Image 1 (cartoon, rainbow, N blue to C red):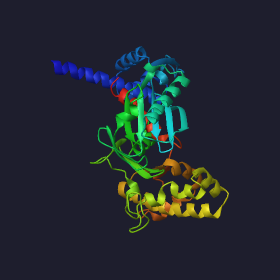
Image 2: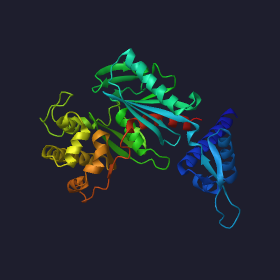
Image 3: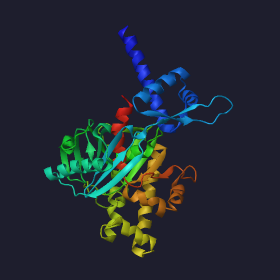
Image 4: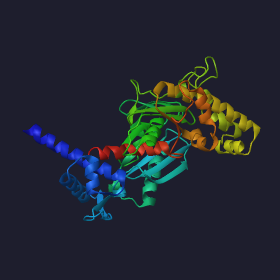
Length: 375
């Protein structure tokens, strides 16, 4: 009897969760449309909607035009009923975002804050989160939590940053980063976070490979919208694919890794460390920049083709360099099509949707998803 009662509660809870996700996805929808979308009866949908309204997560939003009968009531999500913060820690900067229940970006800030594993830095990290929320006038009870993306490998529980070449730290408890943040905190690898942000919406759970082209090269593998992290949390370390045996020296100590050919520094080092200045040089036709970009795209085409041959799904390029590809990679798909052994096609390749803040957005999705799975 207890088991049956418990199962009934679980079914009702899951129906309510599905109803909220559907309303978040549609933005504005009628009861009949919602019932058809979910495959639930009208009374069940209405009961769930009433509960969501009572929780302040959904509101009535007028009526739809009549199609011959009575006008149907419209329901809409209260997007800002709850909010989440995302933080991206890099070697030189801090990215902070605020997102709503649908994962939509409310605010994005990028602050110069050189990383140091010190009390002052960790206090500054907490201060930056507090400042953002105060400036937006967000009461603490609306905040679901803070997701923190880190450039390195975390253990399976997200409790230890086992290795970060970018930050030059190893085996550091992630709770250090949340010491001055008075909200539940969630931790994730930066490339995995960016991959989640790219695939995330409430309609689709596609399979996708995300290639991150930043200060180091990494990536994420998403199968039906779910992260695949491998047996040792190192899946998606595409930067250590061998591009040229006995080639350039990689930071890992090996030779010929993709990272040595496609990290952002390969380009930005030509213009004093500024990637924006490098692409200004490409735009204005500076020979050094144009030639370096052409060479870079050649290496990248090999890497992307290898990923497509391995996973046979959408491949997205993001990160610092990836954010420039849509403007400067006009013939890149032609290069990919020429390498495709099955058909001259490269429609599988996508430019990243999030040009800025992708890792922070993906990190912020963790508390949102936790809430949507259990509210």
